[in-house]
Length: 212
Picture 1 (cartoon, rainbow, N blue to C red):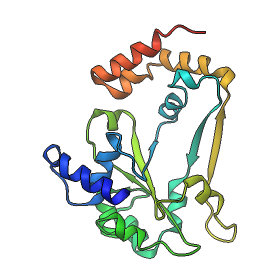
Picture 2: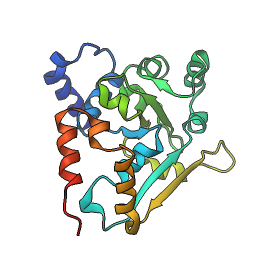
Picture 3: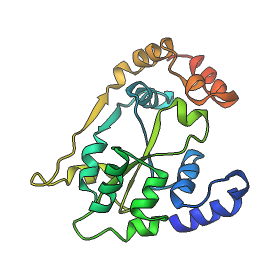
Picture 4: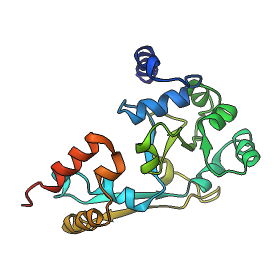
């Protein structure tokens, strides 16, 4: 349903978006506002990642996790054209414009690069759409196969080819309250990461929730 979702989003959201030349920009905006897409949210900050791992009180009875991935090593699996664009800019991560230059303007062009026993992950920075993107040090990843999960892709990297340094760090349920309290003391919370009245109300609602 990805193509239909994006089409309908473009139809109704065009008044709010000035830059609408590539699917990568549209997908970034859509993901940012909650539309289901194949993109995954990431952050450069381990503290921001930790916040999201312990932000939902209803999940405090279960372990959480943080995923760490070396995107520069992941990009060693890209084709020569994409690698040359990164090299041209002296970068290890893409922008939306760089993605368009190397992989085409639309997700169909990305899908066309999928082949049996060959898929790749791309990490890219979205435009600075608002303070939330900036405050969260956010970036996205996308896979060449929309039905493939990133953890399966990471596990499938052949030892004979380029490896990708990654780890899954477990946050035990038993320490979630302590981690949450320390993040709040460090001013890492919904109010500072989301901003606006929505972020303020989310923070207050959680902060004053009665502890069991």
